[in-house]
Image (cartoon, rainbow, N blue to C red; front, side, top):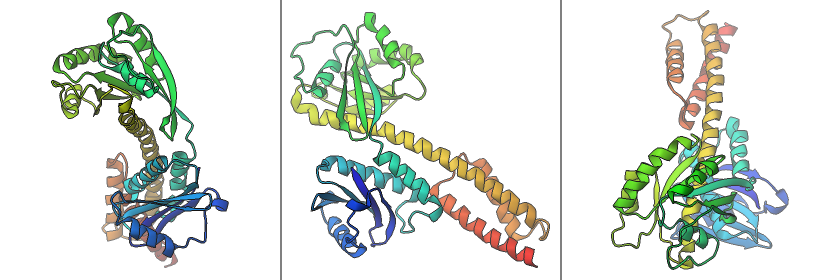
Length: 364
């Protein structure tokens, strides 16, 4: 469990802090100590450091100019904590970049909510199905995820096989289903698509299989929800005639990951790929929520700007620089589907200036 999150600029300036459990956040670690450790962390190869004090584990993670510090339970797995730290930095940089300005006061509550969803709600349940032509390695992948050695010879599947995995990502319990590829069993594809979060199309990375896969996908995709994420697995990358995953992805038309599934020795790599796929889906959901929040804030600001404009028009000429600026922003807001974090900062500053001008006009 993560008890506290700090975000710093590499210069040592604190940009954000949220405490989830004050009893396990070690307030005596002041900014000087933390920034010293961050500076040392910047000198390591993977820009990650750990510190253990009592029963608390602290991770320092640096990307670009931004560092995050997580205070967690000592039993928490370091690789999972590092994943959380990386995602927190990604969320921060996506919104605020690498500047040292920090989270604006009026966005702290919103950003805290994002982190809370990211950190304290790991019980999300994801449904993932694997589809594809026969003999592309779907069952081998599933068996390896299930910590079983795959079959040495091809045995066609006749039914769906599924299991729920908690070691794919710390953010979700992931139900993975292996669906048979033969045509007489493809009615299962449509049935299992209901409520599916992610569809993984597995290929053997060869040209003939890809052509058949594209034809089959063209017939099947009408059953897929618009909210379902579709990715590819370019399996059997150890075959001599295997195409590179990037080539497979270009042919299929969606992001595709390289993979091998010959034995249990491949499990770490398979877990890594499945983790990236699942966390991409979760992050996409957070980004969509981010867009909705920006849209709501944009609408609120637009109403405020129009109100200021209407009141200023009673006292200053229409060609006044402030009214020209306001009209420019109104056009800019209406033309944009959303505003970036930098644009919102810029706009909030402008609104403050216009409000000051309005107060001056009202007094005079």
